[in-house]
Structure formats: structure tokens, C-alpha cells
Figure 1 (cartoon, rainbow over the protein chains, first blue to last red):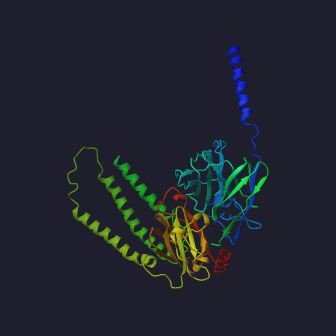
Figure 2 (cartoon, chains in turn green, blue):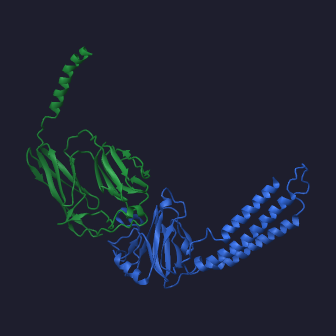
Figure 3 (tube, rainbow over the protein chains, first blue to last red):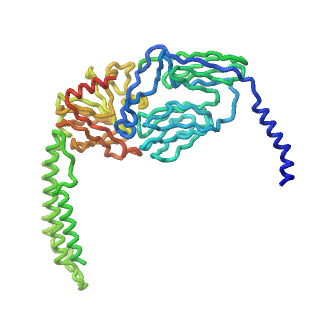
Length: 239
Length: 265
């Protein structure tokens, strides 16, 4: 036992020094940030009538609105996925699971971003059965029933894709999975702001995706320090 | 053993008849103009078939009691030959009864399914889908927007496939998950299904009608009192069939007009 410990010590030292090399500060001080806005008149969001599912309807004192275009003050847009679509170095898949909730007969969050190969866990927090149906076209399509109180559904997606998610039981339930090949992504808040940090100096293509407004891309050059600004302006139509 | 069976038969007959006579499991109260005729027809059918049922079962029990196997192992010699005239008469009697019930019932049936709706009927369009109903009102312009199935987008509330960008008639269409109607006003529903067969059943209205994909099926009725009742699907339509329902809300005309204003898009 003693001899084994002694022989393994140099190995341990080697491993520790290797880890140190990996976690040594890489020159990644650069970043991209910006604001997403729109011009024109966006469609009006409509109240969702959940009266057929009283256990969900009772969770919402005021009617839930559709979430297609969530506009903030100053024509900002929420739920825009901003990510590096070209120029990023491939990294290992994220191991931390991402969580998707069915709560009050709504999908929370409305848009869930995950990386290719990242574990996805889908929970049913309601007193009713759901049947989640992500309408994947590039990845395999599936739909799974989930009665109340059952364990989370686990899944992963192997290819990048923006996937519409619906519930086969509650037609109004609607959400998206944004499966990305990069670990550098952000989702805009109600103020329309996003920020991508930790980028190595270089040229990148930044893409912004919105479920209604579509996608826009722009080229940015990130220097060793400082943050580049990249704003996106979408054109909105009332219908 | 034969006599015990006769007693059991008689008891079953009397108990099941009593359940109907006492109306323990009966229809819910009727709230529709046509319901009176249906209930009348239902009662007549129950009495005619009920009397026949009770008499037949009690006679059967009597015969079992009287002529049951005495345990002396004698072979049966005369069955089924002997009673031919009686079988013929019984068949004719039962057929006549069913025929008469059908003829009498045709009037009620025709009132629902064969007569045209009242010209002043309020027209509401109904879309059934897995696993919900949606109801559409034409809005202030009185016109329904055209339906474009390729534009159906449940998540964004476009359950009917309307095209408000190009179709002005579609812009004021009111879409609701509940069927809200004014009391004492003839209602015309046009039923269509997005996917598979469904049904529209409101026991209180005494109406049940299937949705058939590809067909637009008219259905008319008039509700006679304020109520909130459940609309349920009675055609097995898939996994969530058990949960496919909506509410019928019968309101006063004033309440209904206010509801329309509140739900204008």
C-alpha cells in the first residue's frame, strides 16, 4: 500500500501541473455586447384562455399573454438568441443539464438555449398531463407524454437547430429550443441587452435569432481587451 | 337451483326498472328549445321498451320457476319446435314497436338535423383539434375571414389559419376557447376539425354531433336559460381525449355584447 502511494505521487504531481496549464489565463478579455430593438409595429400579444384546464387557469390571476414578441420600453425585444455562428473554436459539450419547465400550462423559459450534446431535463410541475413535442427537423423528432408527478424527461440534441416546441394536449403551449454549436451565446432580456464575454481576439460572425423577426448576422472583430458593440434592429409588422 | 335463478332474474328486473322509474341516473336538466321534444321522445322510448323489458323478464322468470329442470334427467323433447306462431307474433310486435318509435322520433330528429337554422341565427364557427375547441365570432363587420390551413399557428393564437395581413375581414374575428352565447337566441354552429374526428356534446342542450375532418357540419340550437355547462368530446380522438373539453356559457344579451367588446382583437 505504502509503495503504491509513493509510486503514484509523481503521477499526481504531473496531473496537477497539467490541470494548472489548462486553467492558466488565456487572453480572452474581449467581448461583444449590444441591444436588440425593432422598428415598425409588432403584432399584439393575445390573452391565452386556459379555462379548459382549471388547474392551470387558477395559477394565473391575470390572463397569460402569448410570448411571440415581448417588447420592452424603447422598442427593445426580449428572447432574442445571440450567438457566435462563425469563428468560434469548438469546445467540449457542456455537462451541466439545462432545465425546461412546464408550469401553469406554459413553457418556462419560453426560449431555452442549450449546446449540442448538453443534457436537457424537462419537468412537469402541473397537476395535469403534458405531452411535449419538439418539432425537430434536423435532429430526430419525438413526443413524450408526461403525467403529473413523473420524473423529468431527459434528452440531448446532436445537431444545431432552432426547434419549435408544442404540447400535444394544450394547443396554446408554445416554446423553442435553441440548440447551438457554440458555448458563446446570450439571450436578450426585457431591456433588449445581450453580452458575450470571454472571447479570444479575432473575427467572429454574430447572429441574432428571433422566433418572429427571423435572423440577422454581422461581422465583428474582437481585440484582446475591450468590448465591441453590435446592435441589431429588426423590422416588425403588425400581422 | 332453477328456482333460485328465477328469483335472481326477477330481482334484477325489478331493481333495474326501479332505477329508471325513480330517475336515479337521469339526464341533466334541459336548457334548450329542442330538448323538450327529445326528452318526450326519450320518455316514450323508455316506457315502451321498459314495459316490454319488465314483462318479458318476469314471464321468463315465471317459466323458469314453473318449468325449470326438475332434476329427473328427462331429455327435452319439444324445444325449439312447438311455439312457432308465438315467435312470429312476438317478432312482429317488437318490430312494430321499434318502427312506431322511429316514425314518432323522426319529427324530433328532423327538427335538429334536417330543418334549416333560423335566418336570424347567430353564426359561430367551431374548430376542433387535439385536444381543444376554439370558437370564432365574425366581429363587428359580420363577416368571417377566410381560412388558410397552412397559416394555422396554435402557439401564436392563430387556431383557424386567418390571414389578417391580407384579409381585412379576418382582422376583427373574435376567437375564444369558450362558447359564449346569448340566451333565447338561435345559434348556428359550423363545425370543422383540424385533424381527426371529434364530437360536440352538451348533454344539457341534448345535442351530440361529430366533427369530420374535411366537412363543414352545421348544427343549430337555442339555449333557454342562463347556464355554464361543459362541452365534451365523445369521439376517441387520441391521447388527450379525456381532457378535451370547453365551456358553454349562456349569458344575457347585454352580458354577451359586453363580452364581445372585451374580447375584440
